[in-house]
Length: 358
Image (cartoon, helix red, strand yellow):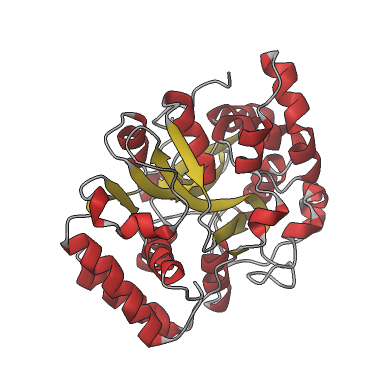
């Protein structure tokens, strides 16, 4: 069986501006901000050994938390790994540097299916890192029947046993989809209705907690029955609790692409390009898939992962698990990429999330 993913990433610290900006001329560094549980740590050390570039690695809880760090100047980053809709927002606000792909030759290994998407239609700013789907994780010993619908995330019969994602875009998307609306809607009445569904469930005690990385301990330990989260993280949890199952609900869901970007005001742009090129390689993508269970946009890596797994572990990969990691087309056909929403709608989301008291 695939090795267990450590619950706490080994982070090379980046917690002070002096550590990031006060290096000597001789020291080469790159400051990276990504998500928790989202890299094979050995890749950091391998890159440092091969290049002599020090990697300062920090995590943000969500796209919204990352955006706040960037806007307040609390993060001194070179490379960030936001999701599609946040990338579009950062491009619109002039915060990302255009990339010269001649300096990132491994960009050629990225499948064309993940290029030219709505968040970077002219392929100027991004190198895709992973992709996947959002769905419902549930403990088969704690529910009466298989979960198939977003209804479960708002159902009083599971009161106190549901974990809602602590991310306004995803949480409201679940409510919008449950109501039969487009998850990219800009209809304020529909968004308000979705908020009321979410708030009503919260007020009735449906939610044990709103979570991000805390979900690992709670679901692995059997402390909650149902949760909204990401397919790749489900597969990590499954290693520690075989009673868990995952579903992309029948109403549809979000499929996402997270991509590496360089900030316009990055202090170490050359080192950033070297890091991105290293991570985009087939070898790094295979190691990452094996560690974090998220699908790779590197076509060669994705197609060869089952053989890589069998060679590494001496047993065939369960293809059912592979299809949760890399959702087949029939699943993707009912999923939608998030789009960057207009400013007034983003403000509405923020106001409603504040009203919710999260």
